[in-house]
Amino acid sequence: MEDYAAKMALKTAADLRAYVTGYVQYREEAVLAALAELRQRGQPAPEEEALRPQLEAMVQQAATAQLSQPIPAEASALPADDQPVLYTPGVIVLFSVLFNTIITGAVLLAINMRRLKNTKAIWILVAFVLAYLIGEAVIVNQFMKSYTLSPLFVSLLNLPAILAYILWFWPRYVGTHAFQPRSWLVPLLVCFVIVIGLGLLLPHLPGAAQFMKQQGK
Figure 1 (cartoon, rainbow, N blue to C red):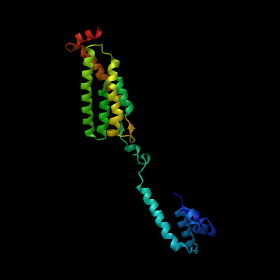
Figure 2 (figure 1 turned 180 degrees about the vertical axis):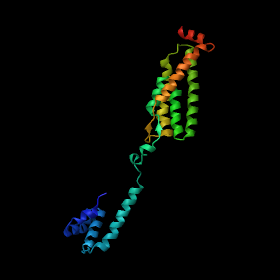
Figure 3 (figure 1 turned 90 degrees about the vertical axis):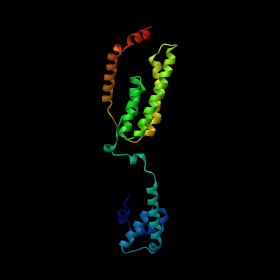
Figure 4 (figure 1 turned 120 degrees about the vertical axis):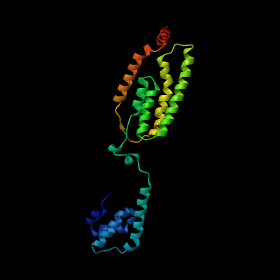
């Protein structure tokens, strides 16, 4: 904010009188500072008694209007130390695509919701994922009756769910406020361990050999 008092202290009496007589051309704070400087110099303006209440009321009105205006997102953003540490939308998409399942992205999204203490959103997400997986299983089962299952087909089936994570769940239950990106190395290692474990376990499950033969035909 400009220091009008210091500015007026450097002006001549004639300049200060110009501020008072032409007050409509200047900011109210500047005219009030000119009046105060004239009074301090022992040369109070004759117009001060009638002019000061009007100017002070206008300054107060402007200050009230400014306080009532919404604070921009940039100004209201939390300090870096107070921002939540979340997995970014890009990481959620990457994990969903990389491991060809909507479960990995849903887990990361749920971790974000838990960090924001939005338990209700987690249950909504769980219900969505379960319903989507059931619908996806029905479609895949019908497709396998007539065609050979392709990983690309499963990826295309996953696409609407991934878009829902970013375009629907994120804006409503995570928000677009400032946050710090969370490292994705730990979930990546966990996913690789799970994938390797399933790869070692599946051949020993009943019916696994027959299933693999059918897929190889």
